Length: 188
Image (tube, rainbow, N blue to C red; front, side):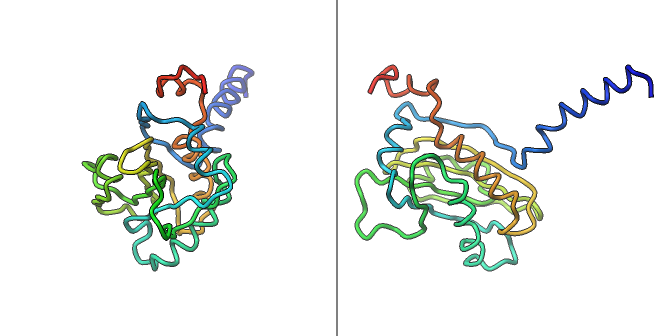
């Protein structure tokens, strides 16, 4: 193989490596002007954080089995606060009420404002694809949202944990670039 071809093949391999290493594809994101990672951290550090599942991630698999298998994957991929994901609703609804809503195969016209008010709609799923619409809510207001998908054979597929790891970095972003959104210019 000529030297030029070897260089071209090496460059192509370097470009393809990040795509192969990343199991998930993260869609568009939105952050409300009120989004503040420090608020999320303070509200969840050392506490339970409710996750609400909606839809059917794996048709043909018992939804209880899916929920049981997804919880440890989420916990292993959790964001920086020392939080514990739970499906259990608090005995008394807290104010503010922070939660993450995960909708599997959401309808294309479903907006995050509706999700935070308890509305869900779905589209038919695509076999072999784990697709989730993630919405972080405070009370009935959206704080952030994104979508993510990856090929997956079932709820215990390791690619799902990798998806959650990437997804949580986006939904619960601690980027200093987002600090201007809350009007404090990054000041506490």
